[in-house]
Length: 461
Image 1 (cartoon, rainbow, N blue to C red):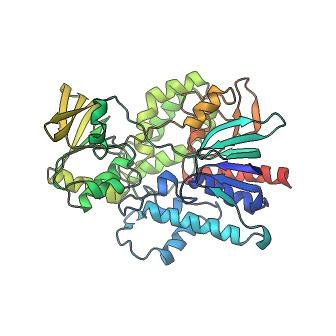
Image 2 (tube, one colour):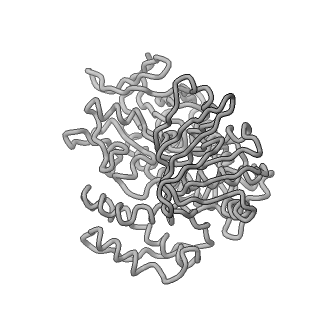
Image 3 (tube, helix red, strand yellow):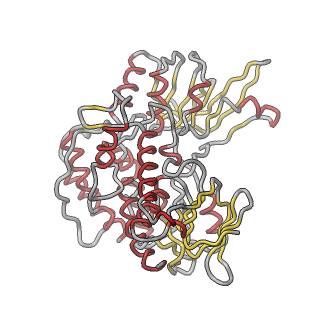
């Protein structure tokens, strides 16, 4: 059993940002243990080695320190010499794996700058399966290898969980081996691309950024088989424009869903959403949107998301220009078809030694529809963290308003079922969004990490 002051659960960007800011705030690296698979700083979002999985925002928006917003861009000029496709008219859009390399380099630099006798952290490449309170205070984490870790304080930084299938998969138990290479549940590592025959028929589930990364990778590999992209709203995200954010607009003093919607309608210009002026206005609305969100009740958050949710996601998560260009090329050649449809079920059909996947769809135009393909790629991005579910089941945390994560306060402290903040259990990462608002960007996670680190540093001295 290992005893530590601080346990960070997770190994992606959120975990790395927390570590960096904790050490810079004065916490000794030897007081920190990290549990999470893979290289620290990469995680699901930046752990893909494929060249076509790209950041969807410009390099200067991917920062760890608010006073060093060009740090990644400056690092890239020296360390990224093989990415001729990064430059576009609206900025530099680098590969996801290169941002992961950058974050790992900054972790190494921060640790190297600490006291040489105390600059090593403990990192177990495991998964925490259970977290519980200790009778004498503090926490005990159980890892997937059976290891037990005790800590005074826990930082939940697990990031985005791997996606789950959005529908039932119908097959006999004996047929499961046939599905192993036909159903790609988690596409983020990109390795599945090396096992697809060029003539195979594919269905891509989802119409967001991951789906576009998959389409871009297929285009570069000159894929010849039909590709059906099942987009819930029948279209792709717009391309990132060359915008410059100015001052924020004024907001109603007493936020209500109807007032927020009216403010959006009145502030956005009467131009196509692809126009840089339209995106600039949208980005200005984002500046103070978190204060509006945090002032809403759970009921009003539900009402606002019902009216604005899918539109917000569409225009908030715009696509890298490279991915839109690739999708347009495949559409023009007739290989890519964008279907305004939702997936209801997947069936494995066997005909002798041949196998195919029959998809039950609900098409917006034709209603019920069937589609036969060779492979299905799950790009929905929808997943659930089992550790969060266990914390709720064990009466430690309170579900957020949408049942997707844990409720936290503005200090990132987890809220227990009695409505009290748990000062020694904190959450920093995408899962804090339902409580705090538009806080999933790398920059917002960095700001939250800085606030948490400043507080925790004073408690661990």
